[in-house]
Length: 154
Image (cartoon, rainbow, N blue to C red; front, side):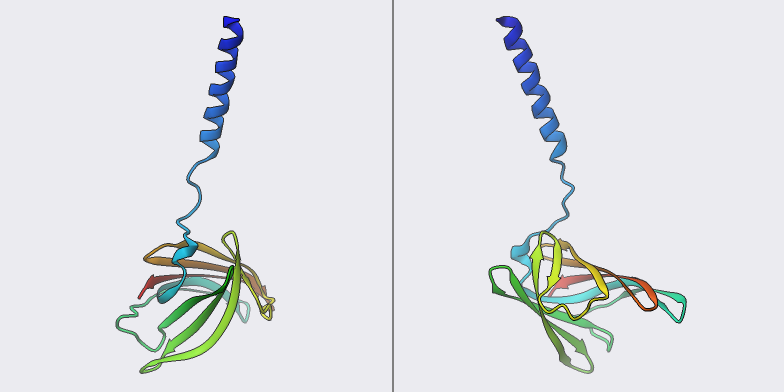
């Protein structure tokens, strides 16, 4: 009986250690409750192909002191898992450029109106009280493209 109890305790210990090892903190800092609000673009990095040449960029911005290339977005919750994002660009003042809707499937961003078929994936990498990071991958007639945009809460 003691042997069975010892074997049982050993099995429980093994199962518990496997469960703890499998539950690592691999998930990025994503809190969908923090999505809503105003966000200013602080870092835009990526690449695309244009006329056969790979063009890369890594641009920093300060939405508190905007220049004409600055961007900000406003995210609002429309329904249970649907959000609206309004894009603004700076040209001596903030001007609204477009509004789109999206849903979330885990950290995957799914456009409600799928006109942009060139995008193969849009992911939410970070969403917390101070930072929002979105990654876009796709392919167009020129080749692959990649864009990672980092926003800070305004």
